[in-house]
Image (cartoon, rainbow, N blue to C red):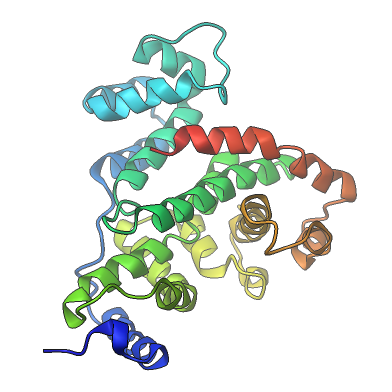
Amino acid sequence: MGTPSSIIPEQELLEDLRTSLQATLEQDLKDLPLLPKVANQVLTISGDPNADVGKLSSLIQQDQALAGQILRIANSPAYLPRSPIVSLQQAIAWLGLNMLSGIAFSISVQSGVFNMKGYEKPVKDLWRHALTSGLFGKEIARKIRHNVENAFLCGLLHAIGKPVVLHTLIGMKKLHNAPLPWTVIEQLMQDYHVQMGTAIAQSWKLPEPVCEAILLYQDHTYTQATSPTKGAIITCLADHMATFHLDPDLISEDTLRSLPVVQDLNFYPEDMNALLALKDTIHATVECMIL
């Protein structure tokens, strides 16, 4: 029987798990979580230039839980309906195809890879950061006149490797007789989320701009991105905005404003003021989208 992880020295445990994760990355990755079926279908519809609201409506109507969540979100203060929305058809008319696609995809992904028993709170925090990044990404893209829906998807999924690392570690739990310390999990997420995210993006056949953003969104890599969607640089700033919004102790406003990515996006102080002023609106939207 293996030694319980609770009494293995943390550094030794960390190195042991690094070896296991690296081995997983070098294998066929057959145990990676699947993209939820609904999310996959939404991605297909939203990527089809001939798609219309009718196709998406038919898909949503087949999933009562998803339809209920969309009705709840459409009626939330974040979307300010003029009067109570009581039918899916009303919700679709109010939200529109692009907004509806983003919401449906988000709900489906959240109920899949961001749903792990025993780690509900930290995984919910990861999801909150993902959603916040996606919403800030939309606003950044809007300011530089780029595709806002692509920016949302890049922001939403840029750190998808983090829950995938956790999923993989849970699969290794048989190697240990006690829960892993969260400090160890966080370190491994930080070290491996880009590699795991890239692997899951390929497995899920995500759009190329999203794959590039996952690989290159960080401060030291976004300059390598070549996609005209500018997803990586947009996501870099969106990620920092989400961190500042959710945990301002980790980054000060002065540091945020002086980041190289702000200059590389040609953002002026008034542009940053406008982004920071969206805090309450984005917070309300994020909270209504968390299951």
